[in-house]
Image 1 (cartoon, rainbow, N blue to C red):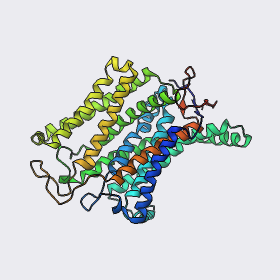
Image 2: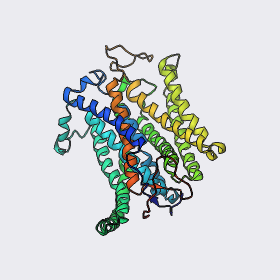
Image 3: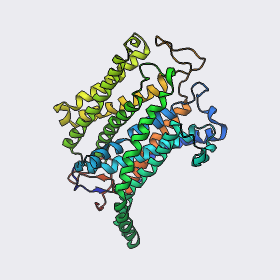
Image 4: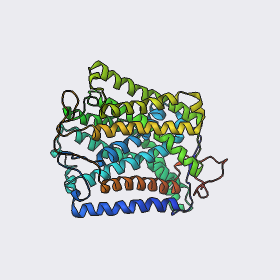
Length: 415
């Protein structure tokens, strides 16, 4: 894949069997969401006064946005470090990020008990400027807008190739204007995720003793920033592999191997920071034959395994093994984030020897919450397929025949 590779609209039948399944799954979750808005959040969620965040914040927001951080990671390589060979990955990564962040923001609206009060958020004089949650909310909303603006060049490219002279003129005119504004948009696209991904970790600094000592550390902002990059790079590798299987997306194995070495660095950095914090701050005493230690060991294994795999020449050359390592990198960050936000959080806190204090509250995701999360993931995939069929997002390998559910690739312009 090089800077001369041009994305193309995939085309093909819009309502293929995969799309029908995705929409059917989302349809079920939409019914649950409608029921929630009519009857109240308590009817579909197991959230309580003790566990005021269920799975929608840890999974739909914190994990989804980690997966969507591929746009941030590729942007750092492509624009900040001037590695133009990654440019062909920008559009699929940005579209994935735009969808993931949009779904994360939408999930907040579903989870809010008094969601109608969200209309007051733009009223700046009412802002609590000492709130880390406000900083996350404002940054995420701004980043969602920035990501969709970054998607616009693909839309304008598609319009420029339209048979309609009017749409073609619009695409060419606004595409040129967009190109002039992109340096400023890209600057925001690097700044905003740096702020809010670290703040997602910073939020749990104030949880104090309610978060298990093995997870509560002053390094939470750094660990969340590092883990989002490892998840994002992993997500880009997984995404392009899936696109290759279905739509013959062009996959440069050497480029992926190079990017995975970068990812190995972030994964190992996370491990060093986490273990260093445990050792230097006297937390080794919290390790024992208990559930917390089990989760900690699982997390470490999930971070170390792909880091080692990414630097092995045999894995770098093998498409399937590199795909598996990338999946592990995503899973590692997802488990760490879910543990921090949900599994290792206790409303009454933990004792000095790391035992949870009973508070009368327990939490396990309800069927309704799970259906909504699965439905959100399904509609995200459907939106990606829909946009990629219509507009030039994916770089296609012209030397390969189509495989599953792909239509004739449309001619489309480059940049």
